[in-house]
Image (tube, rainbow, N blue to C red; front, side):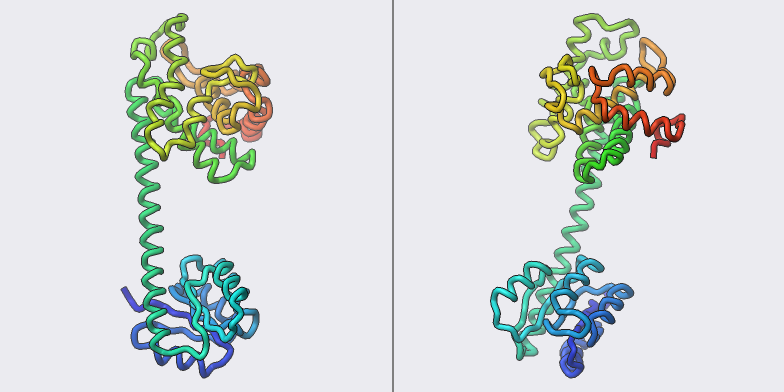
Length: 330
């Protein structure tokens, strides 16, 4: 790649020129004697390493590092200081994620080594982030693959898991659920029916109403899903949502007969989305119902099967746009 960009900030121009002379052969060194000017540079240039004095014009070195982190989280930081106050240095290092500090007067050889080590850390940080993104992408593809494998057994439920996942995420955002919990909920929804792999195909595709024996197979799918996923540590957080998505507010659900707030909020959200999609989708024994009919059924199910607040929020979302496809929800 091209030379790494180093931003050096110091209120003394002589120090900046010295840093530039020492490093300019191997790196592209940009200098600034003013903190606000340096922040402006960061807004325009991709900076890989910041070298700053603890005393600079405009703001304190600590404040500059904090604000620089808001502009560029990846840039590695080295602070030059004449302070021997250990507590102050540790506070600066910890609060601003400084790679290291160098006491003044600093030695050019020491600075070169520190810069080399800092940029090696930068490279590792970027590579780790790229690896994490690839793992996340592969993880998502794996979830969708598993959901598709299940739905391949039953053409009547193709797309069901993705619709439930999308609907649940929309409801959760309206309820101000954290993004990390929304991500968890979405993943769990993709696999919420994975336990139906253990349900006989004759039951899944039955064109008549299910009898008591058939329903026993269906009721087992939440526990089967838990058993399928439990050996995989990455799935641990979503397992309770998969196990409990057929619990009811009145305690008449399965598999554990949980009531009210004992059912996790994310599972209660999934239950509303799952119920709505089940009502509006075609099944072997009946065609899907209209959104208007589904809304009426949701209204009737509040406080018994479904969480009243979650259902009200979802119904409000459906009515405010008068949507005809669930993909129009947001």
